[in-house]
Image (cartoon, rainbow over all chains, first blue to last red; front, side):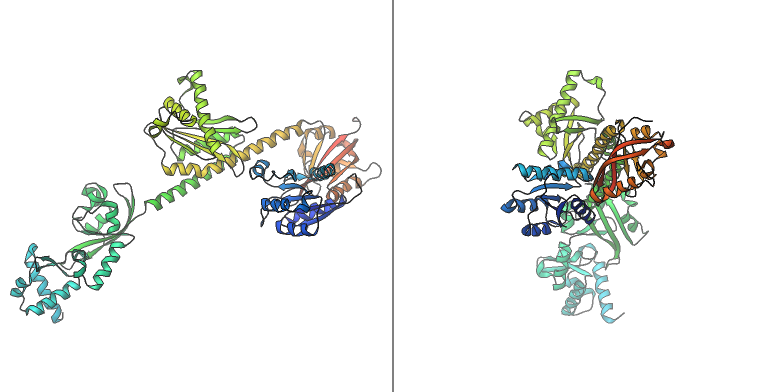
Length: 132
Length: 495
């Protein structure tokens, strides 16, 4: 990271192994993190705090990704939040579902991924915010 | 035997002695020494009991001995039936299963509405003709035949009738009031159930075969050829193709085909046209995301109406086809291509066959997607294989799980067997000092921060050292950390 300001990243994943690990690693890389285990918790926590970036797993029980994206889209406080989708499904399947249509979705990372790829994507999303 | 039973027997014997013409109450009063009103009372008791029945001729009743159970109930008008007979006749008539009564010469004495709906009213006809349209001899060995031949008293069987329906029959022998025997059968048309079971059987067989093909196949071409063969084994279609969609340039590649005559049958030009027609049909199925079914005879008039029917009709003319069927191969998110099935003149795909093909189409598409992805990964893996920069992967304990040829070459090993399973720290050391602490720290740092970059001293075979810049990252899978991967760039020449 090139800026001193601590950036906040929300991680939404129903797999505790991924959720806790990614949060811990991002914190070790000087990010603040908010953890949510599903879409409901994600939207509730977004009422309290607005992160710079959301890492959103697209296959979770409860609210669908489309519902989560729609709720974020309707909330004007969240209009500058960048979203990176994490998924075990392939990109064409996500495209077919229209998940990449939202302008807030800036990247799509298929599992399995390297932390290098994830951190680069988060940094790129934050630099895109700066240009806005 | 009680006095009343003796009287009943006398009445029944008297009626039987009158023969086929039956007996009026006047006839009986001359034979049975009873008052007319007592005789009438006994006759009605026997009728209520099902042992006698009557036909009304003018104002007179002509009495007969019931020759088959139930028979008399259906001879009577509603007003003449007792309350129990009314209830019973309604139940029998409206039963959701067939009720059939036969005499011992295969004559149909009674059939309820269920059976009338299937065969029409066949009372008086021979069972083997009405149901099977076959000679009596062919039924001797059948289950009902076994009762008539006296081999058994009760049977259960499943048979095919003249229309190809599958009937489940439960039948038993019943003694009639006149001492003769009848057969009462409960018959159910289970064709739909059998078809459904057959379909499930075929579907699971096809899924099994496709699963095996996916496991065996190394390339998409192999997989598609194998799937066409599997499908043909279960559904005997004549010719078939699998065409794969290339969305990046909106083209189709034909990966496999089966059953076509030799290439020599058509010139190059005609052959090219045939491929264009096939692509036209397949593109229509892909565009619609739904199967396309073209029956040549039905569609003749519409042949030039649109591009699809024009392609299908031209293709049908080239191969003398009766039916053209194209099914898109799609997984949830992606259209991978289509399966084209052709039937020659005089041959048709049943609705079950088409439903079966549609049923396995997603499985085929899933298999294609899997092999396609594996092919892509193998292609990408080639880049790592030919890279001159050493690449290594290790599990979360630091045991090497993969090294590329460049690593083997630079570290001086002949085979990956020599290094896989060893701790990666065996191949690195701290620049000053021992214990390989620095290398151990790399794994800790990667686990903590996700990445690590820095310089290390590589320890090659025979202890020769090499300074290298290591870039390592943690790989995260669906459920958590999987492995770590590192690229080691040598900083000075060997030696």
